Length: 229
Image (cartoon, rainbow, N blue to C red):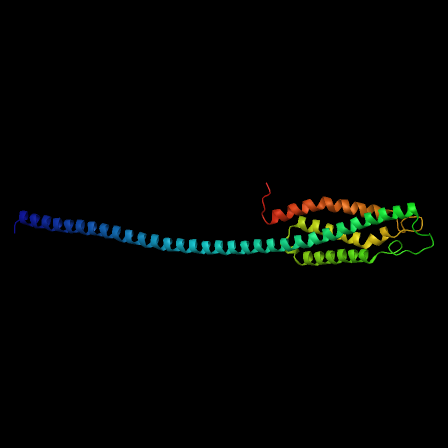
């Protein structure tokens, strides 16, 4: 074999090997792209599943929160409805008792002016409370206790401002019920038998209550989301 033949064979082998390498390189590059694409699709699919799972979990939590909030709001509305009804009863009993005291004072002035009884006489309804008055005092005490007990058991559902206003209303109303007889029953000269500050506190209590009630009404509406605009 001549030198030229040897070179030809060598070049042919090298060419063949080079072509094969080129084929192998191209094939490897193609397979790499295919596997990379598949791996990427797998990762995308995995992340998509995780994302859907998270979305589902968040949706579930959102639904649970909405349900709890709705139930809480419904409970608040129910409590405020009952509280408002009990507060109305306290207001009605207190206003009735206040009006009764005014009527009693008018009657006392008439009896004093026209001397319908002797100074030594012990007159029912003048030197004592009437059965009707005692019933009115008892009704106010009972309604205040009922309101106070209900409010105390359900403070958790009320705002701090609402609790403060409720406490003031019950305390002032209780003071009025306990001191009716002190203002109704007077001595022979028509003077109070108690410290003069008691009647002043009675009138101040009534005025304070009438100031508090609109504020309390606004708190009730705000808690239940009532828009009064």
